[in-house]
Amino acid sequence: MRIATTIFLTDETITPLRLARELEQRGFSGLYLPEHTHIPASRDTPYPAGGELPPEYGRTLDPFVALAQAAAVTERLTLGTGITLVAQHDAIDLAKQIATLDHLSGGRFTLGVGYGWNVEEAADHGVDWPSRRDLVRDRLALMSALWSAEPTAYEGEFGSVRASHAYPKPVQRPRGPVNGPRTLIGGAAGPKLFAHIAEYADGWLPIGGRGLTESLPELRGAWEAAGRDPEHLQIVPYAVLPSADKLAHYAELGIEEIVLQLPPAGEPDVLRVLDGYAEYL
Image (cartoon, rainbow, N blue to C red; front, side):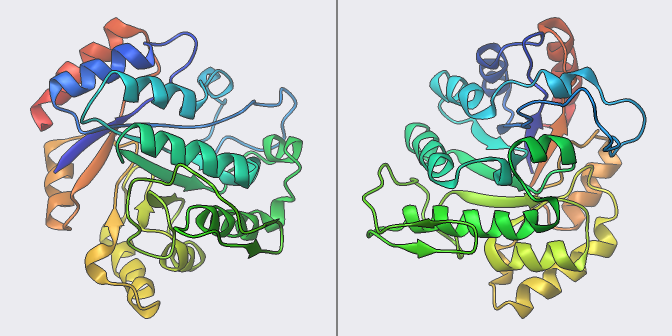
């Protein structure tokens, strides 16, 4: 089982350079970074985990810039977003960023996709909240057109692009409907999410990894109903606080990669946690 990590990197934490080097030297498989462009100070949307929103949400580094630094000082470490708020991006610009990072890293990038939870943050980006899932689907389709081998036009509900020369292309060869790097969707289990995963992704990023025994048969059913190859479905439990029993359970479910949560802390504290996680490698 591959053991990757995730962390809220901020202007107050360990740096991407130091963390990436330590992860690769210690044998961890990957680094995933979350995204928030800003957190409006006046906010009605509750924090999904309950209580006060932790301060690191308003201090996160741009994940693509931070992952580019990580790519530059490593050779094997996989790089991913957990997650990219696709609705808050211009699709043409985002397609370029993703393709460039995958190209420069030699095909090491995973695009984690999320629909968001912070209504006010999304509103500042001009996102109509009820239609955000349709917007994300549309933007992924537009990006897929730009990543096609030949100039391909796309006309969607929310955006369009002419048949264009758009290089670099992602290094990774498509396994499913998206002509780009491995694409995983985060979110809570349910028929709507599973239908979207089966339609235009390579798999699921279940936050915390709870309830997989019950939810995986539903996802696999939606996947096969969409005509997708069961061997290609990827499940990557995300932001997991590990235990030996938990990892054994994931192995029994056929899971091949998990992402462990690191604290949003300075270098000494982060390295201390990595020392503790070494027993799972």
